[in-house]
Image 1 (tube, rainbow, N blue to C red):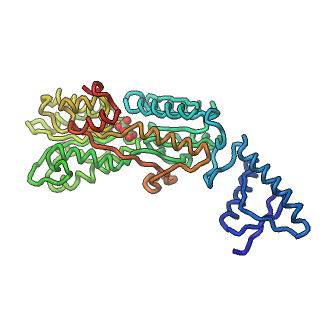
Image 2: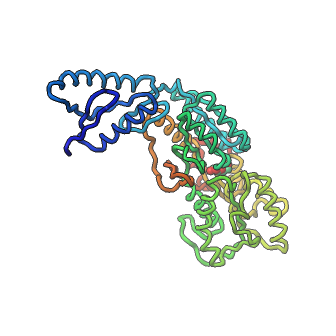
Image 3: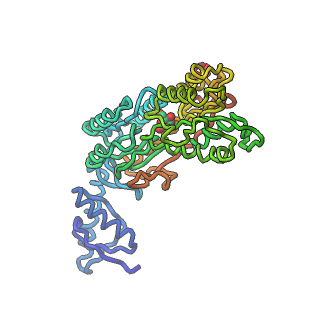
Length: 430
Ligand code: BGC
């Protein structure tokens, strides 16, 4: 391309570019530098000046470039590296940066483990941390995040209680140029969420339903359909309607079960087959237990046997199993097939004891490590690795995500997946 010229007001020189995209980047950077009152270095240019001025100006230019570079890698808080995106804390040392970690609750083991893993990995890298649990209370979570901002946090890792309630506090985060990583649960309705890391939530739902089918003997261990069985009675539970994941779990599960329901192989005697009927606000075990009791009383009165329950979370499974053994009168060895999620110790014990049939293992060590990698990258002005830029539309933008893989756990493989991998000790689950 014929060189295009551009007057750099910071350097006081006329520059010529042979590459259009580098020219555009330079123009943008000058504009941003003006906006933020700081400088961003660019090197891909040649000076085009009247001949006699050339040597003088080039000397001046070299000095100016050196100055610009020094400012960029110094404590200006601006700049980018290796073609990476601009970040709030670029060039700051980890020990100068506070990272806020906002977790929803301590009522479930998984979130305690998530918080601990994330905190430890950040500290190992030298970051300062502020870890808070919000008791599943939305105002508490908002005020904890506000506090993190007041303390000067440079990045936030947030597992939202309700994905739609953080818009205002995240607008404040944006004003302070704080980077936001949505952790496990998507944050909805705001442009101010930078990245997302989670498991492939649709697949988690497919796995839950698949394990239900395997437990009922409709699918064999290799995942192949086995004909001639059934019909079976099942009941369906879904997660909290304000948690974006709950819908993904439900959709994955229902896509898997629907063909069997349409064929009459699976029946739902309660007739409650809609998400709104099956959803349990805030994933509360006592609410699931009560719903299961009500269904047993209303739809299983005349000796109708319940064969399976789709449960999306171990906490709910425990409540459901209580209802089945009390109101339902099922003895421990004759329980319906009950699924779950999170491989919490209590449920793995129950699986080992032959009560709960399955759970889904989501290795919180991997998730924590991924979130920390993202924070570390953005605070260094780099682009974090993502592997999904299509699925997670938060109604304002598609949030770039890194999705991890989950595993179905039953009595047959818990040792390999949970004990041999060092996630639990054998004594934790016996
Ligand atoms: C998580 C699940 C968890 C559920 C209840 C969801 O957002 O993805 O792993 O079981 O919340 O805590």
